[in-house]
Length: 290
Ligand SMILES: [Zn+2]
Ligand SMILES: [Zn+2]
Image (cartoon, rainbow, N blue to C red; front, side):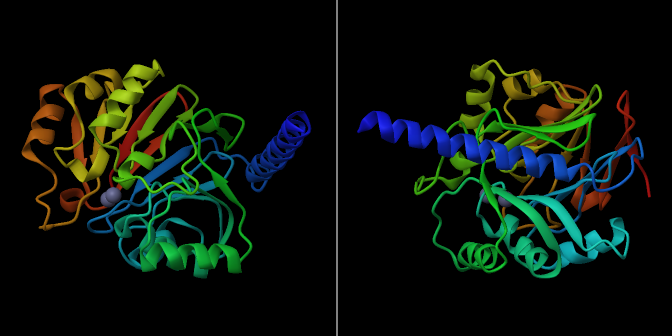
């Protein structure tokens, strides 16, 4: 009986893998090649929202910020006729990450969604799942080792979570964070969501290559993240903090700013710099001023 069950499970996983491969192939055959990858860290107040357009035109939105402001931001960086986004990633269910994505699901055709699957009983997260179901959007549960090909030269690797959180109710939902590493040619970006100290040490301990040209600083620059050991492992040239003006949490923490300064990392903040845009040609990466 167990054997049959195992065989069934294996068959199911294979089918899932096949479906996944088809989805990824579809992601990068949509538009002609442009040879640049663009990363926008939107100034959407206290929250996170990051948009990636690969050289093939495939588009990924990571988090949607605390309200509908993300719609105007997408309108600025996407062609007016483009009403679809290939992949939307919700790093974790907190309102400052999921709320804007609810509006995105209503206005855009989303190809596939990735999330951790953790339980989190809030109206926003419930509405997010209701819309996913209503619109029949396929959902992939994130796990270490998943490799998402955005173009022949661009990919997103899922570094965390290390196990499935489906049906789990972690005491701190930040422990179920999706952390990913974007690669385009030889340039890299580490996208941490609100990952805190324990996850930073989990990543260091895993032996994964954490080096990145850009570090999206964890948890809005809170002192719960950005340990010296982690910054040393990532050793980025640039850091970006997504943070609201005069936010009630006092983010970013002086301690975080001091750590980044100590390592000589050029740091941008959405509360002071507005939208922060980077462009990569696959060999080098630069900050674009608008
Ligand atoms: Zn947050
Ligand atoms: Zn959070």
